[in-house]
Length: 121
Length: 111
Image (cartoon, rainbow over all chains, first blue to last red; front, top):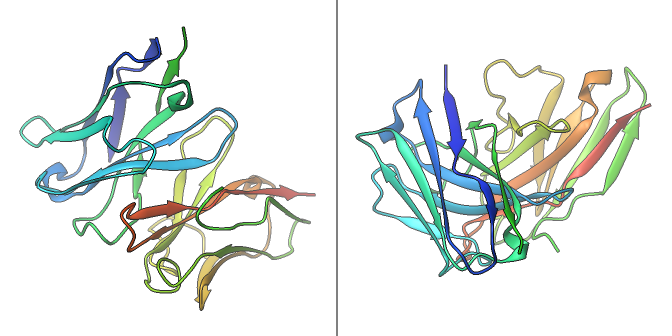
């Protein structure tokens, strides 16, 4: 079955960087759009970024644009999120999620268990 | 402030039906049939319940249904059960730069 396992979360100081990874299995990774979605403590869901099945198209939420970079390695079934210039408001559980092949057909079919990122001095 | 507007809370008794609304604009909910709904229990990852306005993924009970009228999408849960108590989020494609918008979430309480 579909399995998405995030890693890389932790405590980081404001202004520093962190890289999250998501290991995918149980489906054809190279045929699917992939997303990062986050949830601040006690808050709602916030979409972070999307990458097309082949990595050629990437889009970002306004709050992370210019600071975060989404990427994928289809040979290793791995999704990544490079987070730079981190702020306190980036503190959240970060989920990776899969979608269908078409970028605009927005839905999150399956989700990982999430990894907590805490930005604090 | 979320791009899509949901009621903060709804409640119902076991066996009853409830409806959660999700209001957007013609740039998102009203303009495209890419509305989805997610259920999230405390401490758990969200789960897809409805996609493309009214489609249920395999394994989702037919007690859950979705619809849309104009700029407002709705999730209806019939025959409420205790395990339906959770947070529910709507989501839509948008033609703005952001591409994806979420609602602020609705807490469903089963009385």
